[in-house]
Picture 1: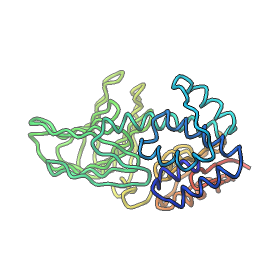
Picture 2: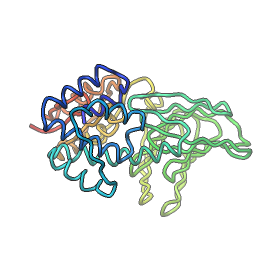
Picture 3: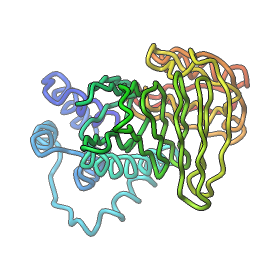
Picture 4: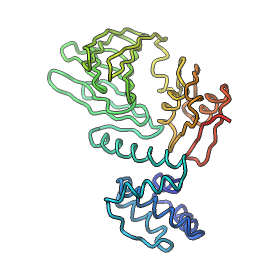
Amino acid sequence: MDWLLRLQAKPNDPGLRRGLAAWIAADGDHARAWAQAERTWALIGAVPPVHSARWESAGRSAVRETPLPRRRLRWTAGRWAAGLGLAGAALAASLMLMVGSDALTRLRADQTTGAGELRSVTLADGSTVHLGPRSAIDTEDGPNRRGVRLLAGEAFFEVTPNPARPFVVEAGGVAVTVVGTAFDVRLDPASTTVSVKSGVVAVRHDGGPTMEERLGAGQRLTVDRAGGRTVRGEMAPGDVATWREGYLFVDNATVAEVVDELRRYQPGWILLESDQLAGRRVTGLYDLRQPERALQAIVQPHGGRLRTLTPFLHVLSMP
């Protein structure tokens, strides 16, 4: 998996391909592991054809290629995960889910970002959307309404005032309506969080009992999309969307929640092995430009340990 991730990042690097070929030729287990990992990767659609040709050519002299029927994908992935052990199983499962969901999201989006990538997009009405890492949006600009659908991740909005055309951000069934303001919207697997830097927004959720609340500067609202439960909070307006300056501010968050956030800034995978560590709470300001140091700062006060197995795989555990 380490080789696959390196090649995905630099598919045209001849030195990297030579290194892969040497690693494959060095051991029969290497060759078999590479063949199985590559086939699984290709079958789930993660290898564009041009890259697939380059990657396969790197190990063709050492690996005899055998076509694998698509119907055997589940069996192959299962054997591959079993061979890698517990960490490998988690990695394989994460890979399957991530690639599938990312592919569908990218098909629906007109703007996306990768791990650690920030991007600012100016819309047709002059409003600006600042996209966080691993985020995706689909924009809308009609005669009576303008807005954005947040499909993944997080975005900060600076909306140009226009009372005749409200600006609406939809995120997982939660609608945020504004005329002109600056606010942040974060989409998590089970919840949507809205934080306001300036102005006023109306937040509406129609899942379960209909809910509509108004938020002003320095106010935050988290909506549980399944049950409609809401949690309000307050923060200094200057602490809204500190990720745009390269910092993550958390207040009484669990280690698991902070790790989920840092995954968006770290290429590869971060595995959290300990439930005990996952539930511990932290408050602090962390440098997103150095996610590995941030991970260390999060777990060390609780006696946790960070192991960097490869540049693309970090494991957090208790001793």
